[in-house]
Length: 364
Image (cartoon, rainbow, N blue to C red; front, side, top):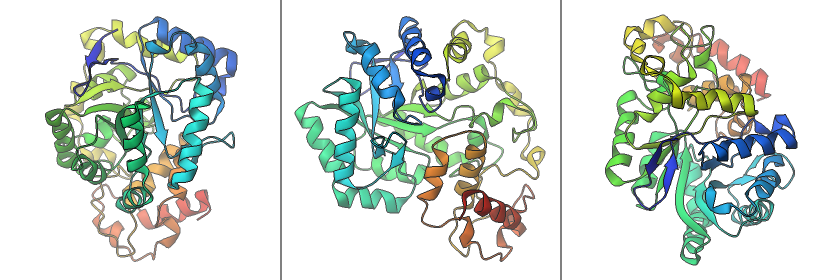
């Protein structure tokens, strides 16, 4: 395993971490064996944004007696008390949820406390007004939280929080589909995203990478916006090469998935090489939304790229995407069918028709 040092600390973080959005499907025994296997192979960074509550008690058992071997990324705003994943901005609910997570994990401290999934400026303002950040800073003064972080998919939100000078770590979605320089991918332009990574590196804020495979889309030629599949190793290398990135957090279901991901460490330079991206052009993605937001501004205020992304991720099996969509202030059902987006889309996506499909899929 290779490690990268946290700029605002002494922690040395494994370049391959572990995401837990899909591990719950394997059952407790397989979860326990998968987490143990990760630790045995030098993985020491674990993101606790899980699909449901089941991984927490398993982590508690596995880490009992060896808590120092793991850095846990715990989310303030993710709520598992019902047994399922929930998202909240209410401070009292957050306090009770964090207490539950600490008890389940059998620990009295959090390595990285993250303000959870803030994708809109309005949600950031609500979190600030409710006192979430003040609460986290108090826990840091008490030693309960070692480092404060933020998880977001939106460069503008991350930029605003960076302006507060409180972050040691940012969890951000990075992959070739979102960043490819021939166009604007995901939320924000390629230049905006690159500027964010560069700022993080310059200010000593580490980045932990989610969605390295774009919810699996990049691994299948049928769903890749490039019309050609990339490999997991190409995507991991791409993410690790971005400024500020310390670790990539692939979601795994079991030991088989983990063994395959860990194969990156022994992969050849040729297997990791992603220079093939230079031969792709955005035009090859015609008819497929790549979340570039060239269609903006929307007269009805829809964030068309983000709506499309949550839809695509939900259809690809991301258990958290539906909840994120439900928390958007303006959804696909608010589309007024004016045609503005269809006329502006450089990839010829029929967005009006797509908004109808998305609204029907999510029920609103």
